[in-house]
Image 1 (cartoon, rainbow, N blue to C red):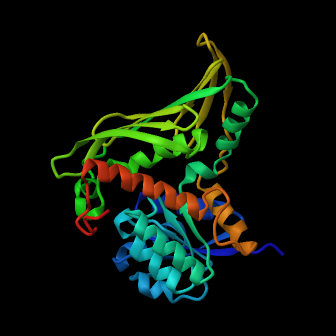
Image 2 (cartoon, rainbow, N blue to C red; image 1 turned 180 degrees about the vertical axis):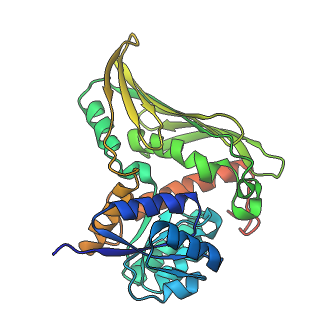
Length: 330
């Protein structure tokens, strides 16, 4: 008999709704519990998405013994406290990106997951998607020759959202949007970075509004990245090779892959499969790992979570951006 996994969600915003849609659409998951600091919001969310129970506090939900996996969907400034609570109660946890505000917080959570022998994963959905293996197959097959550079721009005019303007909420572009171009570069160029050049244009509140990043790798390849919360929308990636290039529409969800020859002639269009909304791949990866006794997901292991947080720490350090709740010695 197939096991049904009880899933719970903290938070009731847009991203929580997307995960609720996924949970309802999968055969192996049950919409079990939702928690919010506002009991009315939790109850409304439960009614809308058919969750069995709701809680007006995260602490109360953490004590529920029937939960198999908790998805943290609160703003990223709250990820550390929320994830820590559930880990300390022995719950498996999937944390929405950005994983935490900084690498120190990420390391503490990873240590806790190992101490309590529970899964801890980051919901960087891009890494779990079938489009990743499709692109890597094209590259390995030599269809664009030797890869020499990657370009990525993820810019969305969302500075009207209060938390993104607020330094005390780990606001700014980098953690919310910039993680996607950085992930795109990591996926297809690796992580052996030998130099980083970057600059940011600040918002009036002091957070980063637009970021320009150039990464140079040990093999000579480069990544040219841009991200902004005050311009756009733009959501595109490009992988350049000696014999052609790949264009990726919606680099965060790898929606469409276009292959061109060196002259710019379109040779092939690939559309990766999506069964529900794209979140199903990260959920299934978590359930597979839990079922086999693993404490991390193959697509986004703890070492990778930590290295990406350290990379973003380094960028903020170079810009002189420190969140009010952090030590100045970032």
